[in-house]
Image (cartoon, rainbow, N blue to C red; front, side, top):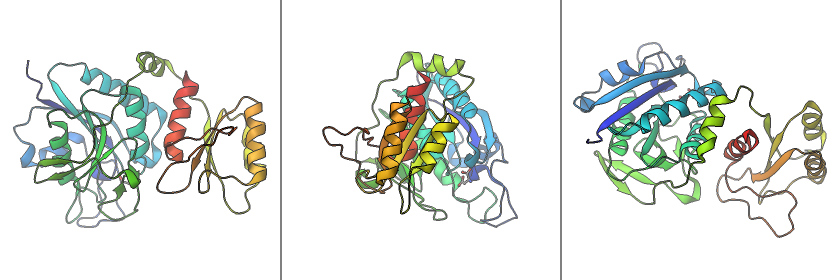
Length: 308
Ligand code: ASP
């Protein structure tokens, strides 16, 4: 059987947003169905496609239940022999968290490509249709695999992708790792390897059965930071904390002491950085373990660890 079908899972976002005709601000995200988004794109006519509306939300409101549904639907479709890849339409605000969550849970051997838009579908010149065409190019590319994000002709890996700009069409970056590839006139110019990894088979099952997710928060080091936020969260029952440290994960002394106390009480704690590039370099003897990814992705890892 040839694998040439592309499955498009809709979750909402600006790409499905509707506003005053021609306007690119003041719209409502998550209004237009995924089938309608595709119907308006002649470049995609002729590609065998299946669509599903998994959610219809502004991704600032992304919820664990949507992640569970998305992981389950991706797993279902990836198990079909005729499916070449999956395209997910998503809001830009939490795209990087969903990308890392899906990479961790599925580590797919076929491509799962998340795309988005910075302008609503009703804008004078919407960017969603071109992003969808580019996402299809990645999803249909022979040998493509793993979870990637495509926006403004740039392909980012799930581990690196990060929203950098609140308005610009090319709103994402991959930090100092750089993009994974560019899509140029439908052709892929690849710079780095596809996201690799191995999915933990039991994780999907566990996810499907999870009703209550562990409580994990991010606490940021900043001028005047002390122990109060961490102490209050621990007293309220938090189960995991990501410390978004300054520089190489450095922490205000009082905050660090509070985090160590939290660890002694069984709270899982990791240390990431507020810096845009690079990763925390841990030192031998560090009591607060360094995490190489951004605070929001470190939080995804803690959530999955605590789910176990
Ligand atoms: N707030 C929107 C969302 O994340 C922004 C966007 O999609 O660009 O759904």
